[in-house]
Image 1 (spheres, rainbow, N blue to C red):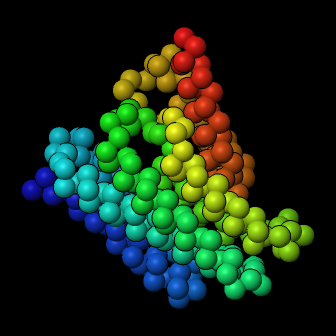
Image 2 (cartoon, rainbow, N blue to C red; image 1 turned 135 degrees about the horizontal axis):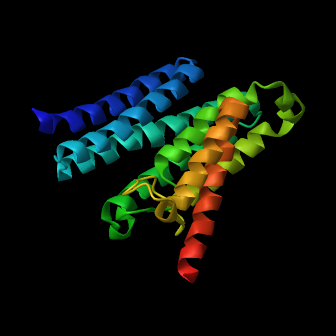
Length: 229
């Protein structure tokens, strides 16, 4: 029975994505993005279970990508569409959010055939993009955003494009997988996790975009350091 455990967890990821899409169209965006976070937990657990039980399979890999496409590609795209629509007077601008789903599909397809990504990532992972988008409904309701209401739709459209480009960019990024816990081998990972915890404790959900940006910056610095050693 243990060989079915990872795929079952992946299926829960997919279920979260489907329910999230339904909730988003019902107007419950906060519930939809909460399901993104829950799906992220299942996405972590399915890989962890597969490694722990030593039951990795090709079908599991493909199922994981299909689930991620729905939960971390289509759902964030819909959330972004609804956010832009709520703040925009343009009939067409909200459709720019579709680019997130399209580039998520490209990102996942590249990941499945790119042998370079066994120990790291090339391009921003789709869960990171989804987490970035999932924080926006909570940030937009903050008081400090009130003075920017006239420009929020444009900013959200620009964010959609930037996140999409980062997903397919030839940009080496850290994978948060610890083969051991030595400081020398995992310096960048420890720094990133420490910064993330401090930001989350201090700024709560507002810190999520900052954490994603920090992830990219620390990865770039780590890659340059490694290339000069």
